[in-house]
Length: 310
Image (cartoon, rainbow, N blue to C red; front, side, top):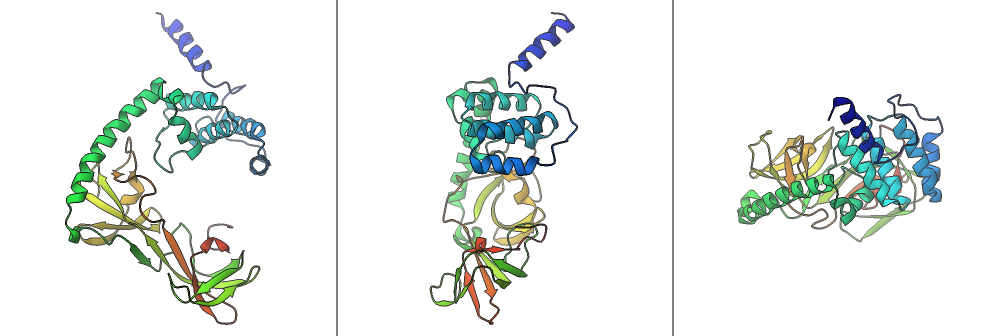
């Protein structure tokens, strides 16, 4: 086959994936009302409109992986799973990551990747093969995890004192978005007051109560390959507390640990997503009248994010 013919065949195969309806550029320009239009379409459940908007976004930013992910998600919401699979095939050909680990792709897209329709495609078959390798490795290290002595493991329920657990989180004056009962201490049910909606409180401190996340290192990074570590609380800017060999240390390991470590990562989690008790963030606030109390409803407060409005 000549070079020209090969190019024609390749272009034809590409066109058989998802039709964007026009040229795909890297101008990275979207209408001024784009984000508001996206929000409106989602609120109204107008999935056709959402797909049209995401198509325009991709066409103006073909090299933007996030835009392709959002297009795939929109197609799933529009009950167009077959088209979403075509988009995933296009993403694979463009070298974008197709990793079902939590946080790597929209959950709606991950569900499509679990269907026979996706698994029967060449990219789906390759992905399933890589998952089998990962799952086999995980089973081996789970056995080693169960053999670890107690002094090499953190407590089953870890409390991170003083935690403000997301990027740009700050204890400062917060707005109260919903009436919130305040208690004398974390896990207590002794009521000491109530924060009223449309008032302000002073955020004082917090405690993150969580189940440590066991993981195994796939590459040498800060600690040797094959080391079992336990991820604890997030410290921001890619750093977090990690329990290693009986000690708690601040580390960047958590930024490179995922469920399935295929490319450009350091390790894999050993237990299924959502194992153990749900993480709870208790916050301590002070009312205008001087009352101080705790609540496990931090989402009832706004103005916690110093990097933007929340």
